[in-house]
Length: 369
Image 1 (tube, rainbow, N blue to C red):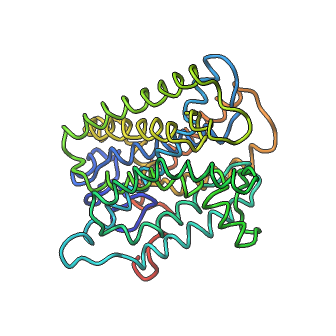
Image 2: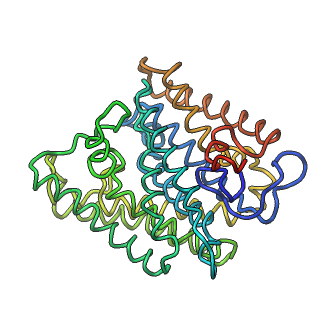
Image 3: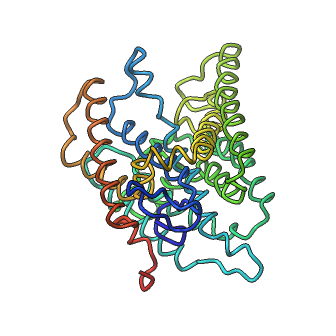
């Protein structure tokens, strides 16, 4: 994967030698972003394998990625898109709009098709494709404008999400958009009523666009990402708990009291702030530990470079080998560890052979192989 058009979310910098051959990846490549993306993928695998909501410490640890891994994935998608199009922000630069349109179309159609499989997972790829498409007009916009829009949508998106349900009197059912659905239902589920509504999830993506313009190699920035990311992660959650302690738990029916929640996938501002803070801390930490990542975490780097391939592969494995049988928390741990280990090893072996994953290759604009 290079930063041209090879990946779901490019890491930036010059093409790197495959890790694990005795030569560390090129200094021009931000391998910390690859490692962070691999962590997001592994977290999503754990969430998608399940089960979720088991009591006790083991259940709480297993549920830790819920509402966090997917946000990390989306933030990194914004970072990758910003890096991919950085030359367009230079004087006389042109947007790679044909590449982005091709990528968006593949992700939307592929995501809707994958939703039809029996893996019992809410596929995020169609939302990715729509976010890439909607971001095109903002790629050359001033950074302050994009940052302001991200902040506004972090509040306005959840408020509108609640308001639409109250105005229509119809609570959203979190139905997944699939290829068999008619276009109006697909658009409604992608933008407002599905598990990853663009109305809300555009905020972390826009923040990723802003982060991709920052000097990510600076140690000072990396430390700040870790510090303030952790502050946001803990602070937003604690604030939610304090407000709930004073005003009470949100009710089961949709209402403005939902704004107190910081629960994963609640679509609420405090959850967004907390989960995005966690994403920034992970990204900053891996960037700060760049040398360690290059020397010791080659498998994570390889997996991050094959993020789309691994994501699709785990859906196919869940559909073909894991579902519909239910399993205990111990079984969930076992399946998650085995599946993650197999995919990590296969990704590492593939990168030693070829730098671009099989599905990442499809994201390249035809004629530019």
